[in-house]
Image 1 (cartoon, one colour):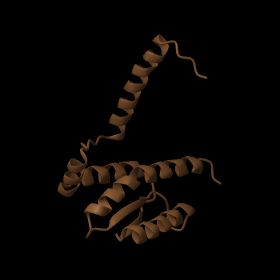
Image 2 (cartoon, one colour):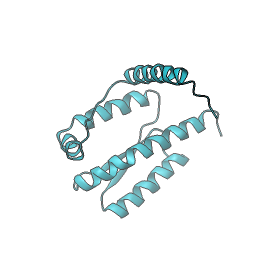
Image 3 (cartoon, helix red, strand yellow):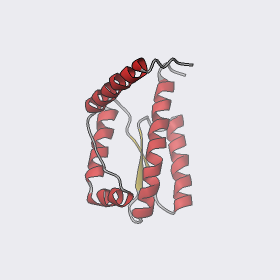
Length: 135
């Protein structure tokens, strides 16, 4: 296994885990639109196989068409961010999120990194003041 491929595998699993509930909500609401599963790796690889098996299983279970799109190459994070922004801004997505009591907020990876860093600093102070020790 190539170095860094386990990192990519963890990232892909995290994306699937986060996207699956959204896909299920979309499948219930979008009865005529196919749900796209974005695979950030080349076609024919092990993750492509997993994505296609997942798509087949979800299609059978939910009666909704699931399509696997392979988007390999540099800049995947930027493309995925742009797709996410576009989908959250869509009127049908907004109505689904409103019905679920969700507020779709998008940002750039740099904005997310700044938010995570600010939270890290804030909670590090709490841990220090509370004298919390790792067990």
